[in-house]
Image 1 (cartoon, rainbow, N blue to C red):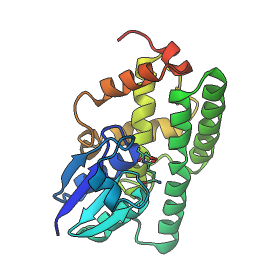
Image 2 (cartoon, protein in one colour):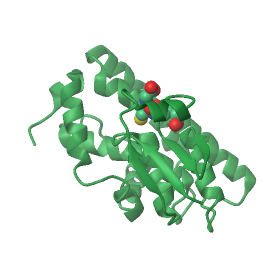
Image 3 (cartoon, rainbow, N blue to C red):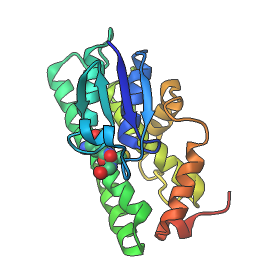
Image 4 (cartoon, rainbow, N blue to C red):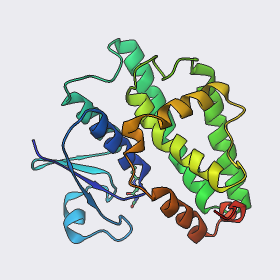
Length: 220
Ligand SMILES: N[C@@H](CCC(=O)N[C@@H](CS)C(=O)NCC(=O)O)C(=O)O
């Protein structure tokens, strides 16, 4: 099966799909577009106008959660828990974590009031996640699973923002999440899911948005 992922370089949803493809050692091609100014061929095949979109031969698969489940389905190794209750529980937390991207976006583009509201929404969610995260390396123990891949783009962006600022979004109050973030960000397939220099692109994006967060940047 020929797989082509249509993506946008900074898209955290597409990064989830890339991590899965890397983790499952599946060959794919990647085509970058700007979803704010999409080419006509993309508009013709995308029902939502959003990336990621995966072309599997001539079939179109969209919505990152569906794409990542599909990638796991066609893989030799299942990286969801085998136990159906545990799997459903993991999927619930994956769905829960997806709304954190809206909070991240609000923090990047918002004025001070919006930044604080988005930060408080995000940290409220992280607090709930902290209570269910154990002290194991990953969410379900020693193995890197779908839920770890789902959280990776969030932890990566939080780590970047903490580097760019004086730890404006420090996770220090969350012992379990801090350790989990460290474990996830050390995974090779997570590290290689973004190209070298994407952190600089993210920095410039924060700067260019001229939101409150841009005033917290410290010179690199
Ligand atoms: N629910 C979608 C969200 C994807 C999404 O928001 N993608 C952004 C880029 S990171 C996008 O395409 N934005 C353009 C738009 O919404 O028109 C998913 O999980 O795939």
